Image (cartoon, rainbow, N blue to C red; front, top):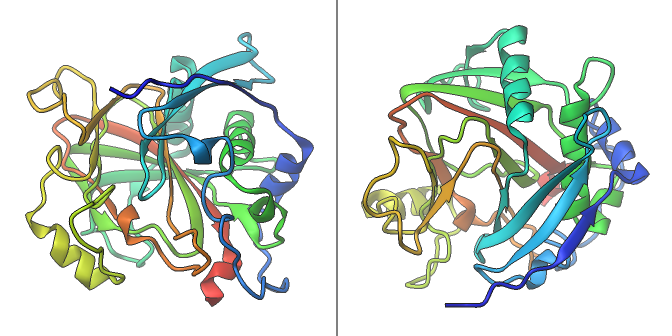
Length: 306
């Protein structure tokens, strides 16, 4: 078994992160785009980049308006292709409850996808949107953004005028709820999924695939995954709850998650092509219990022009 390497990584809420958050309301599309997307800017920066699968970093983030002014967590790499990292104990139980309350207090609606009116791709699911910044936002939500930016985005991406973060999406899936295979893409460089009540079910069927090339289009990858199974192929992030504690958990294809954990993954190839990484295709598998998750998407809008 590979020896886990432990480090201490201090996460501070730098002023440049606050500037980044303020772009959430109106992304800049008029700014001059990079003539060429150089390699090494759309993936993880150091020290995350050097982590091997199974290795992790110890980290903490500061909480400004809480009795506990520091949250300790760890960052573990769970896949190389795409880059997938598990943040264990990233949220406290109280913060999870607060996010759920924000959704319930604001009112939830039937969830759609980016295709307006599409409620068939995401089944038995309600959604709420919470501003990631501004006077109507939550200090908890903006603080999570600031910490995530400092950890996962390269300096080049953070400095671009077209970079920003979307509002937090909070989802409640009922029994049988699911979200079919999809690639977040659409200029979204990084996705972060927060597990609000510890029920997982996020499956990356093509993660760390080593038995053949992955097609570079949606039709090809959807055909490829038809005969694959969670827990046997790719990486399956499974809730470590009583209903999910079943056989097949102890293998390289299954990672158990708990309330307060989060997963971060990159949606674009990082070799300079500025093309979607179809290894980041994923789904929300049908759930046998109520599932609460939240999402943040970090954008570089100029990618839409490549």
